[in-house]
Amino acid sequence: MPDDVFKALADPTRRKILDELTERNGQTLFEICARLTTKHGLGSSRQAISQHLAVLEAAGLVRTRRQGRYKFHDLTTEPLEQIVSRWLKPDAPETGK
Amino acid sequence: MPDDVFKALADPTRRKILDELTERNGQTLFEICARLTTKHGLGSSRQAISQHLAVLEAAGLVRTRRQGRYKFHDLTTEPLEQIVSRWLKPDAPETGK
DNA sequence: TTGATAGGCAAGCCACCACTTGCCTATGGT
DNA sequence: ACCATAGGCAAGTGGTGGCTTGCCTATCAA
Image (tube, rainbow over all chains, first blue to last red; front, side, top):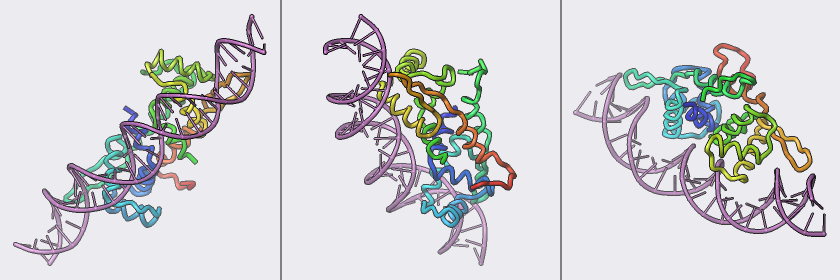
């Protein structure tokens, strides 16, 4: 269901989060918040980023692993390739539903 | 500015339009309307589709050519590849901004 | 010229989404 | 035990986007 992937990519802040995780994978929520405000100049609150991460996780773009009181976020790029290939088949008969 | 591309891809109806143009390129507005309602079961009005096509054109995903009173819409897949490659560089030093 | 077809413009309505606010739970250090 | 840190939950609010409604322009056929 790539619908959630498109919805997740629709927001600029979420794309910035993906950028941040591309640079440094496995960050915690507070780390992402700090680096977004300092490096990208975003004034987003912690809850806002938390909700964004939830959307990204629901889309399968981010996986989380708990360790103590820390929760690390890892980027998953697999859904990204499939969504675009949907229109990049010029003459493939397999539309696939 | 891939921002408009993501915004354009966020809507399911616009993705269906891209699907339709992938199957048959160079359709008019009325053709797209008819095929969306019959094949995909979408009850979208003509104006709705027209506005969707405007968004797709603003994103560079659709190019139009006028011919008499007809306006044909052609799919342009070039912006699609670039937007995803943004996060698909695992270790490439060229982030490119 | 008249009528029909293909498309455009603009205002208004409504639902969703991002963000805030406030409070709560859990883990770790001392 | 205590407090600080890391994170979660839920209700409320504002703004944007998608859709409608109504009317208008332009091209072609008779």
